[in-house]
Length: 76
Image 1 (cartoon, helix red, strand yellow):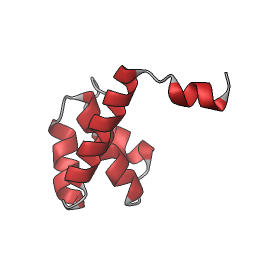
Image 2 (cartoon, helix red, strand yellow; image 1 turned 90 degrees about the vertical axis):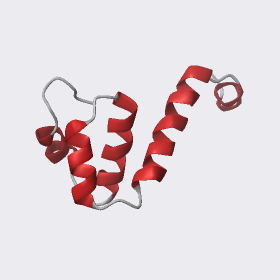
Image 3 (cartoon, rainbow, N blue to C red; image 1 turned 120 degrees about the vertical axis):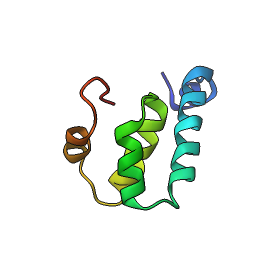
């Protein structure tokens, strides 16, 4: 598929998922690392977990560290 075809024919459900993650990232950007880590350990919604993880990764945490902190039943 060409670049333009991929750009113009996008999956609306995938876009909605990405938008929700971006909103969570914006909401979490003003919180401290401790607040985000405690929220990450309690959260069950995959989109919220992904958004929190993205913020923490941008602040220097590794994916391995974050996966070790999360409950075993949910891994995003």
